[in-house]
Image (cartoon, rainbow, N blue to C red):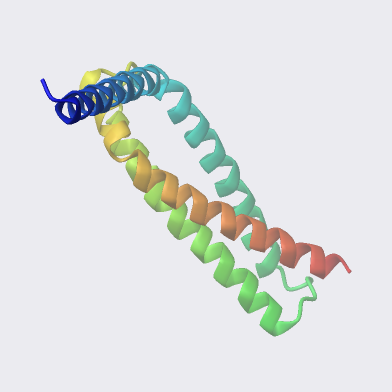
Length: 143
């Protein structure tokens, strides 16, 4: 066998071994994600309900005629609260699709959640950005 063929064969074997190792690692990660879907859903539900409660409190506070907030600032706050409620609706929709009012999640529900996890995380990131913006504006109001 020629030396160049041996080098090519070794390179191919190393490439196959690397991909097999990566596949095993990815399967291991997926197994842990699959196992931890209950914890992830509980976390998402609790965060969403907490943010929902805060947006309701702030909406009532903004609607109070005794509150003295600049008109443009009040519009910005209302806009951010609307965006938060909109994103919360998407998050709650994803969670309800995954759970479908089941107490214990089965294979199908866990798979649905993991399949849509990237879009759910995108909504969570957008919601986090809205919450940070809301915090910044509320800190400016306190000044």
